[in-house]
Amino acid sequence: MRFQYISNLNLNKAFERGLALLFVLTVGMQYTYGQTKPSIDSLRKDSISTQYDVGDLFNSIFHPKRKASTLGKKSAVTIIPNVAYNPSIGAQIGIKAVAGKVLGKDSNTLMSIAATSASITTKGIIYFYLNHNVYTPGNKWNLQGSMVAARTVVPDFGLGIGIAATGSEADLILSNPERKGYVLKAEYYNFREKVYKQILPSVFVGAGVSFDIRRNIEVSGDNDLTPYNIYSDRYGFDRDQYQSNGLLLNVQYTTRDNQNRAYKGIYADAGIRVNQTWMGSTKSAVQITTDFRKYWSLSERNPEHIIAFWNWGSYLLSGALPYLELPGTGRDTYYRSGRGYTVTYFKGPQYFYSEVEYRFPILRNKFLSGVTFFNIQSTNDELGTKLFKKWQPAGGAGLRVLFNKATRTNLCLDYAFGNYGSKGLFLGLTEAF
Image (tube, rainbow, N blue to C red; front, side, top):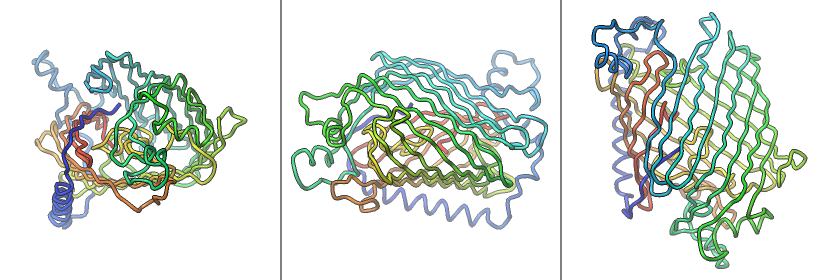
């Protein structure tokens, strides 16, 4: 889950300065480290023993006489409390775990990862999820899936990118140019599973299914003129409940050296989703989604100096999607895009997102590291605003704490800010991308 606080500051000038600073940092680091071509594969595995993570800190405090764990004995499971606070959800308490393991003895097999979390809040929100990304020995098969059961509270700021629609009063409310906040409550159930088969080195083709079910939907406000109600009535969706169920077809290319925190490589996935009424979907729809990530290590000696790039997009080709299933801020697979805004702050049938991040070590033992990042997003609203007509930026910086050096798992603490006075702290286990 994502957490943030909102104030009423105009930060356009800060964005310009932030973008300029990020550009200087990027170019500067490329110049400094570009004289030596990175060769991360040449690093010895026992270099991990020089790193220091939370497990080492725990042992140094409670078991000072115990010898440091070797890589072979290091647990691949990271468990932490999931504690947070947000005015929309209240105080939250729960537990979260992330695991990573290479299956089989083939040295080329990619690491398999899984994560789960269960939490409850003082406002009665309950959230449980379980997801996995598993590579069989030799990468012959790749299984990706997730399961969610939740009682959710979703902030809503209307359709589109923040441009006022011309037309009726309902059009203006739906486009919500002032980004007035609403709250949507619902029961949410999701099951998604995709199975990929390797057909060429690093190339996979896959197919699967996705079921998204929302029930008992409640909208804040004293009248029917809310963005959710207006959209649902126009496109023929029941205000109280719906299903969005479909078939998935994907092509994936990956050369990342680690799924949790890559030092180098590429990840690319392009897929088509076909929602079908015979599968129980309220409406039929055809949607294309793309996900591209590229990582450049800037130093052979310190491969943690990284420039990372991410592009995520989703484009409706035909049919209609339910309001809460529209692509938008934070609607990627792991809800990590758009730091600086709440989930679905901007959304529409066509959505485009890009982000660049600079990652760097702070301490020599890699226990602490940092990041700076900048992102932009654009969407349409089917009320006159086209995709790429207007961009909304965000940016920020963050601190990383090494939780598990064997799987390169970090605890991520980011402070980000965007337009409309949007800003706040974002917590997560493993990198945003």
